[in-house]
Length: 547
Image (tube, rainbow, N blue to C red; front, side, top):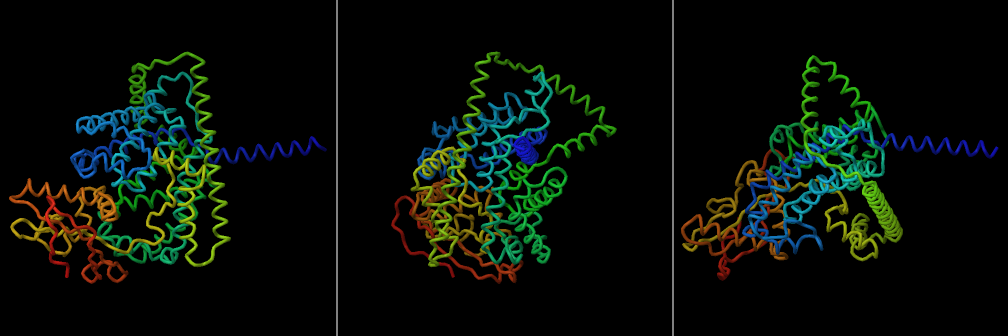
């Protein structure tokens, strides 16, 4: 009888282990595509950031090292803070790109992944004012990728390896990187759940009514309000049900994935929110499992072009094997690597469990002791902030995580809890020495009218919008607006005859309603001055105010 009971428990344990492994396993072909995706995203990001190189990343721009250090997390790690030399910073851009190329071809892949991660967080800490949730998610995914064999296939490392590549990986690291995507979706859905606008399916039309953010197909899509309403409701349900990405597997998971992929592609074509859609797509690739890859591989090998593809593959493998790849033969070195890897994963898991238990216990206590004087979600937010700042253990964990850029946001509040219903544009009213009034931000005579019909055109790059959000929020509380004011005064003096006396920075807000989505002229406008700047220490004077 005891042996029967032990056999039953052993069977249940084995089946449970198999079920979990099946759901957290990642096909090594998915890891290879993810690796290429990450490398291309780094290269694309460097290219796009280089358009604002002098403005955002050098000592002569609007975010010098002193300001970056003041607003970055305590003890923030950054290679870019080693020097203020423009040449050195440009060289570091190049070095980061070279590591991304190394990651792309999969040469010494783990080293390339570690270096790429360190450079990614370094560049983010070099200018925290231009960041978004896309950067947060990208940092976290690249961190978890360090612990995965992303060079197992389709890489120079794989070409040099004598054994056959593993089909799939099921480990703590694979569970963590998949769990990261699920946590992002579910936490966003939970935050959205407090909004009647999202629950009623009214959010998506309002989001696409924001001219400051919509582009490409956005203007066309906003005309189909009913369809957008259903789409927004579906997206909300997908956020709430993000956990299904882990529960399902195989072909049923692929069917679910198509919904998420379709949602992110629709964002990429309609809303200018940076690289979020592409970073999320990179993370979703990891959920595509072995049966799908096998079917895709079988399909490719039966095509008429298969012979040419096989020939190309053989040539690439031969080229990869020609690359020098010296390996250490020391068993002690390999043992140290294994011990370091295991110890690191244990520390990470224990840390996550510790913080989760503490936060969960304090959340329960907050709900139980809630007196109703403030909304429950605000009470929980305050509790979370207090936990990160004051709870022993949690505070230290948060400090280390934030210094490496891998701290989880208190909430993944993308368009949550309420969708944004305010369009924005900036007017910087300035007066010259000759008494002429100009809008120095939009380079035009002073007027408080819209600078463009499509407000997103007021920004040269999408990171400029994130930067201006930081300037607006900083106001008189940080040096951000003052730095921008100094820059505009200097630029005006160089590009024009004479100098500016002062700049009054205004944010103009338009209230977007369902009736005014396509009719901006009918929107209620509010004008708010968030900073006054004196050029060359001139005495601030009264200036014409908005209508």
